Image 1 (cartoon, one colour):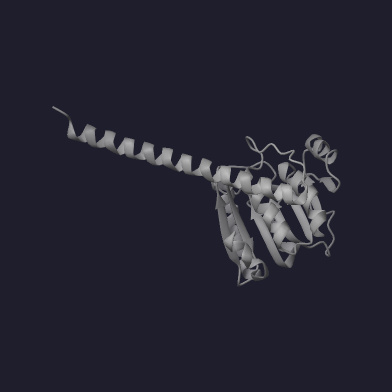
Image 2 (cartoon, helix red, strand yellow):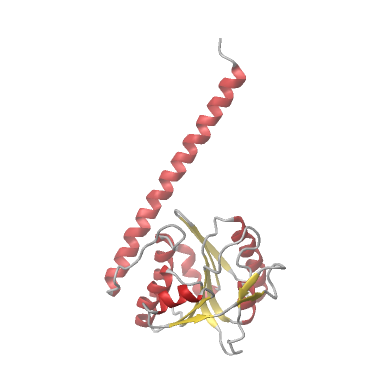
Length: 237
């Protein structure tokens, strides 16, 4: 005779298993959709398809999202925290749209790898203690910036993530060098450490911009976008 508690537990396990399978299938399907959309964007702008969105690199939903933001919105000064696949995309697309790009990277070897493949500045900066971030967290050294260095698109994809308050050093940049109208894109928002930083960034930016808008994109990875009202169309991407 079957054991009801065991049978119930097995049924619940199967239910969770198939839910996970269904979610994984859905996310892979979305990733393929974003891959196709990103390919169309590259074709429209004559961008060489030299991207490898694998492992910890930017996935297709991030490439699509950044590409569409730059293509359809009047962003003029872009700063990217962490060099990688998005560095190649922004180098190919931003100048066509009249925007400048600055990439910050703390790893000198990796910065050199990317610098040899792009035309914009890939600036090697050390990691230093963050003023606004979690105690013990390091962020990119911003002492090379002047008070007039203000950016309307900020991409937060570095430095390497942490379990707690990951990349919260970006708060220093958002506090001092964000334009009045802005878009901030956070990658890896599926991770707990990044979500903690996004929560703090949201609070910081709401104080500056009461009409702050938010959206997210979910495929094999998750991105969260915080934006001012001038860029609210992005909320429907």
